[in-house]
Image (cartoon, rainbow, N blue to C red; front, side, top):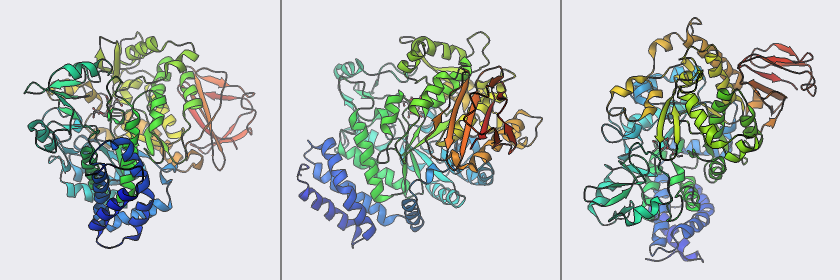
Length: 628
Ligand code: OTU
């Protein structure tokens, strides 16, 4: 055994020898990538595992498993790798559109999902995120976020072969398969977990297990409670009296990435999934993957080093695979995960939350400020813009941004929670609270888009708000991501309260089964489903033929109306987006618009719009205008 050395020559030789042993003969493509990646990976490993006696072996083993995976990678995926390498910014296209669903709730099984491909094409999807579909414990398994094996599909949904076939069929239809990579923790039933608890050699350090409360108490002085409804603090007690780190549910045990064997094992699972045809890995709970005493144990520098190292492993073994970061945290922190060598894609939780904030307050200024100051990204990376996800809405805006507008962050969050869970007088929203923490006053909100926006309550602005929220996600820049069912205006499903496995987790209220009646009515304008579907699909198809909507950069456009959010998207021409989050119509004055030509075109309807007398925006309405 040997440590990694600052002079990497011998370390490199050991790694290359391990690669040769896997590949047999020379492989020009792999060798070229190794040439580039090895120094980077070596440097990352030195920072992460420099003190370890087995550092050199760990590095060699990881590159060897990337080589083995490349050797076994199917030819069609190698062809995909070449196409993506030739067109590395494919995901910045205006044609990109994501959809997300649960396999069982949406279509029963993986085969059922396959049967929905014609509808996905009709909608225009190019990206499909299937919620966790791996083997996991019976009963509550956090919607599959407690994984018992990354190599086995939940047998109720199908098999790994079904998944690989589905990935190929989706690819054929121009749709990239996205799955979760839940790598912060495994379920307590994972083989590694069983072995760790049993003290099997090689597995003792896979998780963070302590003999008594001494260390847990010290850690808990500085870490947040994430699922306080389930257990206080970050640890749970094992049957034998010891304590194990569990950030989320008590059956989700955090892995110990300070142990390179964990990195190595996870790199293997990741490469395995890449070879099934998964094109994007949604990196779950990235903020939590590294712990250090005396810190919040969130977004530590090592979390980034780990992501970068995983990225290098993939660029060796499956170069076309992308990472999407799931960091639902302060915007300054979200941005740190986004770069071409870390996560190329990231959820945009700030825009999501502030879209809802604007609809509640009828004031677009905080959202405008975020678009002005926090929307820009490094070249070659993209936001994933969503109206809501399978998770709760957390009010992750920056307090200093709120303060700049004279808003107190703490009381504003309380207002937003009250508003969206239906406690605020006159609210249009029918959300449900999630993880209310009486100790901190913190809470989050759940609900389908239609229920949050006022459709469930019968508010006259409900349908408009659903469309407006999506119009923002479709136009600001990045990959819009649709929660499938929202395009039919599906409402909250309160049935979860009768299911013992779900009753304790209010997020199930917004994860309804697909509504076949709403689906059948999607072309019927006398129904909510039909109206929302036709308005939304019109916007989707408009986006797909509007090159200005590609890529990320936007140019802010300010009016004198607090309820109006504005920006320009500049491509071949210029598209001006104006959105009114208020409940009253406003007229944007001709003077404000005088920098543009007067005879503009509405890109949605194709009709001419004359700006010389100003522009009227209806209540919760918006316009997409080609102004140059
Ligand atoms: C993620 O979310 C998943 O999206 C959730 O569905 C899982 O329950 C969880 O991880 C555990 O796997 O706390 O309420 O970014 O907000 O990672 C959702 C911090 C969550 C967390 C996020 C987490």
